[in-house]
Amino acid sequence: MNSPELIIEARRPGRHYWRDLWRYRELFLILAWRDVALRYKQTVVGSAWAIIQPLMSTIIMTVIFGHVAGLPSQTSAPYAIMVFAAMLPWQFFATTLSSSSQSVVNNANLISKVYFPRLIMPGSSIVVSLVDFVVACSILAGMMTWYSFWPTWRLLALPVLVWLAVVAAMGPGLIITALTVRYRDFRIIVPFIVQFGLYLSPVAYSSSVVRQKLGESWFLLYSMNPMVSVIDGFRWAVLGGTDGIYWPGIILSFMLSCILFLVGVRYFRKTERVFADVI
Image 1 (cartoon, helix red, strand yellow):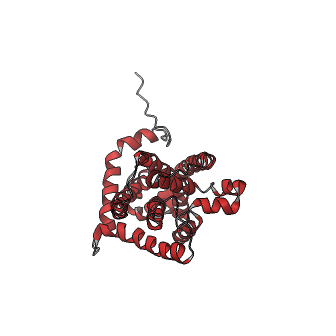
Image 2 (tube, helix red, strand yellow; image 1 turned 90 degrees about the horizontal axis):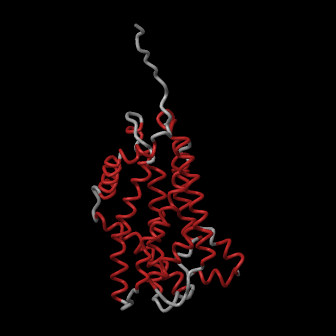
Image 3 (cartoon, one colour; image 1 turned 30 degrees about the vertical axis):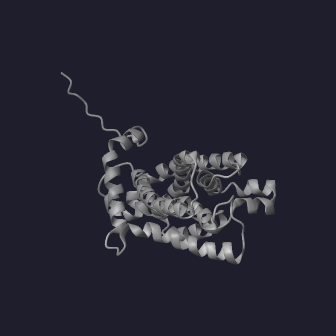
């Protein structure tokens, strides 16, 4: 009688990857809750930091660009509301990009001890950004009430715009996350990228000003910045008015965001196999 043979073969890392993501959904929730708790732990004002940071930036930009530079507001909305309506998606994008890019390095001990799909870590960082976003939305509601500026049915488009901001942030975030594991210099570069992108995006000014200065062709190139369309979409949803959405820019930035997201996922999955060895 022949004895049974035991064959041991290496598991294909991509074979059950997406199924494992669903199996480890509880770990996703645990990491997300831990990140939210750590963000506000031992702070004096707690979750108010999610309000103070965008509010102070809005005040500074309103004074400099609205009163000193004399840039026009979009539609009939007060300049402060126009800036804050753009600051919300930008802050969400910046927080998602920054937190996701540091997620793997900050969980080095966990990575070296147990297996789980590493994509969970940058994915769970989105929850922190969503919490900040929801808290900051209360200030926007208060500002609109103060100025008697009432929203319309267009607010129903906000979930779609938030989803576009997530896609726009996660693509570069996954690439930078993987690069940060090998090259720690990116921990210093990311804040510079975020600060530079703030002024490159139409946060403190209306994109219609850029469109008038640059013309249609150059403005289409400017719209390759994914946050241009997201910010314009937020203003369209919150401020109303007759200004329509620049559909060529929306389509271009959406396609670019999706491409960067797919490239980011592919590059992250390709490099995550060596995270435990390199980190």
